[in-house]
Amino acid sequence: MDKINSEEHNKSLNRLFRPRTVAIYEAKSKISYFIEGFIQQGYDLNNLFLISSTEDEISGIKCFKSYDKLPVESIDLLILSVRRELLIPSLKDIFSRIDVKFIHIFTAGTGEADEIGMQIERELKELLDKKPNTRAIGPNCMGIYSPRGKVAYYPSFPIESGNIGLIFQSGDLHSRFIKFGNKKYNLHFSKGISIGNCVDIQISEVLDHFNNDDEIDLICVYFEGFSTLHPKAGINLFNVLKNLKKPVLFMRGGNTERAKKAVISHTGSIATKNKIWDAIYNQTPIIEVPPSVDTLINYTYLFYNYINRFKRLKKKIVYPKDKKVLVVLWSGGFGILATDILTELGLKMPYFEGESIKKLQEIYPSKIGSLANPLDLPWISNTKEYYQISKTAIEEKDIDLVIVETDAWRDIENERFKSYYNNLLNLKKYTESKNKVFILILHEYPSKSREIFYEKLIGDKFIVFPTVKSAAETFLKLYEYGIKLNKKINS
Image (spheres, rainbow, N blue to C red):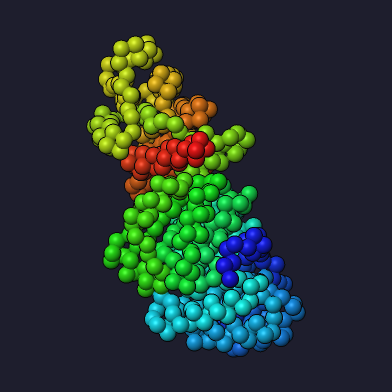
C-alpha cells in the first residue's frame, strides 16, 4: 500500500503533532526526558500513560503494568522504546490489545546497524502494512516537538510556538537546531519531527502536510537518503517539492563519498547522486543549504524575521528583486574587506559619484572618511547627518540590502548612545518600509557589554550577524528564493 496517495492519511498526521492521548512503553527512568518534555510543555498528564514492567512511578507519574490496565481504548501516540529483538513481538502484542493511531519507534540498531537490523525493518514494514490505520515514524528517531500540541522529547525545548516546521532525519541535529536557534536568535517553532529511518511515514508525507499547514510559513529539512523499502520515495518527494507554496531550506547530509558511508551507518538510507540533486534544486523552489547547522540557522533566522515582518504588517511578502547593497561603517580598512567579500559573492555595490556624491556632500561635507559606498562615517553616528546621509544613499540607488557595522557600548544609558540607537531604529524602519533588508554586523567576542547590546538589538527585532560574509550569503538565499518564486508564478 502506497500510503502517501491517501489524502485521508495525510490529514490524519494532525494527531501525530497534537495527540489527545500518549503512552510510553517501556517506560524507564533513563528515558525520563521524554516524560519531562511533556511536563514542561504543559501536556495534560491525565492523558499521559506510562507502561512499565519494572517501575511503579517515574517523574511523579504512576506506571501501569500492561495495556490492559489503561483507562482508554485507543492511543493517539505510542512512544515505543524496547530492544530491537523485542520490537516485532512488542508491536504484535500491542496491536492485539489496543488501538494505536501513531507510533514513535525510538528503538535503534535496526536498518542502520546490520543485516539483522535490516530484516527487523522488513518485518516491521510488513506488520505496519497490515495495519493501514496505524502509522509510524522511525525507527531510530527522537520523535515529535509541537508546542501547540504540548509535546516535546526534551524539557529544554521552548514552550512558545512559532511558524517554523522542521523535518530532520537526525535526532541530534534536530535537537541542536531547536536549542541553538532559540538561544541565539529567539527562533520559535510550530512543529518538528525527528523522523529517523522512514520505514513507514516518509519525509515527502510530512513535507506535504507542512506545506498545507496554515501554522507553518517556513520549513527546514535535513535529509540523508531514502529507505530501501520504499522504491517510490524519490519520485514522491520530487512531486511534493515541485508544488511547494512556502520556502523550504533543504540541507543534505552525505554529499561526499565518505559521508555516504556514514549515512548508511546512521539511518540506513541510500544517499542519492549529487547530479540528481543539482537537477532537483534547479527544477524546484527549494533552497539548497550547505552541510552546516550554523548556516541553516542563519538562513532560517533571516527568512523567519523577513516573513514575520510582513505578517505583522498584514502585507503580501515581497522578496528582493535585485542585489544592490549599501555598507555603512566607521572603518576604511573594514570597508575595503567588506567590498571584496560582497563583490566576490556577486552582490552589487553602487558607487556614489557625480550628482549622487554631491547630494551626500550637501548633507555632510566630510573631511575624513568616505561617502562613496561604503559610507565611512566616523564620529557622526549619533548625529542627524548620519541618518540623513544613509537614507539619501538608499533612495539614490534603490538599495536592496543595507549593512551597518556596529559595536557594543559600555554605557547604553547616556545620551550619545541613545541618539545613535535612535538613528539605527529609524534607518531600520525606513529601509523596511521600502520592503528592503536591514542587517547589523556585530562582531563576536567575549564581552558583557556586547551581550547586553546584542540582547537589546534582538529584542527590538534587528537582524544581527557576526560577519559581513554570513549576512551576505544569507541575503543571497532570500534573493534566490524570490527569483525562483517569480519564475514559478510566471511559468
